[in-house]
Amino acid sequence: MPADIDIARSVTPRPIEDVAADLGVSSDHLLPYGRDKAKIVAPLPATPRGKLILVSAMTPTKAGEGKTTTSVGLAQGLGAIGKKGCVVLREPSLGPIMGMKGGAAGGGYSQVIPMDDINLHFTGDFHAITAAHNLLSAALDNHLHQGNALDIEPRTVIWRRVLDMNDRALRNVVLGLGGRTMGVPRESGFDITAASEIMAILCLSEDFDDLQKRLGGILIGQTRGTKEGVYARDLEVGGAMAVLLKDAVYPNLVQTLEGTPAIIHGGPFANIAQGTNSVIATKTGLAHADYVVTEAGFGFDLGAEKFLDIKCVSAGLKPSCVVLVATIRALKLHGGVKFKDLGAPNAAAVAAGLPNLERHLDSLNTYEITPVVAINHFGTDTAEEIAIVEQMCRDRGIRVALNKGFADGGQGAMDLAREVVEVVDAAVPGFKPLYDWDAPVKEKIERVCAAIYGAKGVVYTKKAEADLRRFARLGLSGLPICMAKTPASLSDDPKLLGRPTDFVITVREVEAAAGAGFLIPITGAIMRMPGLPKVPAANRMYVDEAGEIHGLS
Image (cartoon, rainbow, N blue to C red; front, side, top):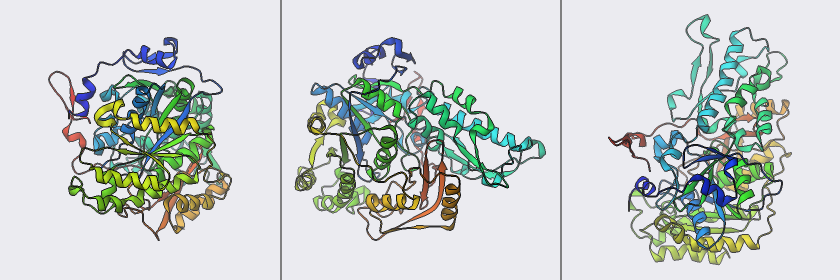
């Protein structure tokens, strides 16, 4: 099969105005970025007409699950059965593209295009967020240097810097070295841009006015004596931050390989951030399409939980269906097979790996949303292996479909599309959130850990306890929680595959994203700035003599 980038280049994109017209968006409401991408600047109606379909997955492995590929394939499949749909996705981050992934625009014949632009600088949203974030960082350190009129205690500063690259050497740094003219020395560090609170603000804001208000509410530290909170608005750079985000707030319109409208906006990383596309993008899709397919990062325990308990509650969204993606390869890995042996038939290992998928189905039931299991097909899958998953679903009364969108595009996803449409058309959206935002913070954390991860308990370090007391004094206890946890396991130990039991979650610290509107309990050894692997994906990328990019996938 051709490489993803070769498949993407074999397709001539439709003019972006024609793609917009399919959604009922006039050219007057487009801000073009060339011939094949544009920002949508159309006003949103008070009552969106479309129905929302969330794509999530079992616990991810290096064997691959393919949420984006399934999401794109499903949107194309909806078109193939005569339905008006669109797909709404997150923007890729340069860090993982240059690190592990090599690309994040789908795969095979279920991709969004222009693939190379989307994977690289796209329309500049990430750079705008990086600039706005670091403007606040610079203003803060300048304030400390210029006399510190707000009497900020430097040791309480929680606002770091960001960079859209995996760089472990920047996780912890010392600022202000080199003499009195260089600033006030203090410890700090860098997170990846996708984990920036400003990314979360962009994703959760209802409109530009809401974004500006949230920017001002960013907590950056506390005063020395009274220990009062110091916020971005106190440094008077909120307006300048908004200036940098003026165009980034608008969602981006592109298309799939089959010309289906695709709206891409907001950042990834559901293990260390909210991991969903923007509210504005989702509502734009719902305003113009009958069926809107969206995704949340990593497994159901991370991206989907945050999508439902933070984004949906905040924005008043109600999904009509959740598509839970599984692969035979991933099930075998969770069933104890080594990665190098995944291509060999092993029905027993598939059965042994099913408890992981079942754990996520149990979690999904908590929200009272009807699931459809999508078996994302690989060429090495056998009929016997597929039948084991199908039988488990039938035994539980759950719809299941084989998705061949990777190999066959929309035609290969038609069965999945039909199953989803039957569920969606029969559904009365009314999902039940996992917890009440006003519940005590520990109760919210423990509810997620028990009901979604299957943990038997939660322990808190002294630092985490101190963090919770500090944020309670600042009046932030009524916020939802955005758990930072390894995506490789239901537990906080990435080595525990399958469906672990009798484990305890350790919360080592808690951070606050007051402007975005959530608290971040950080578990285990999770880092908010990833590192590069021994052999980064960047090593295989180059530009040939004709100016064509190679190595993206």
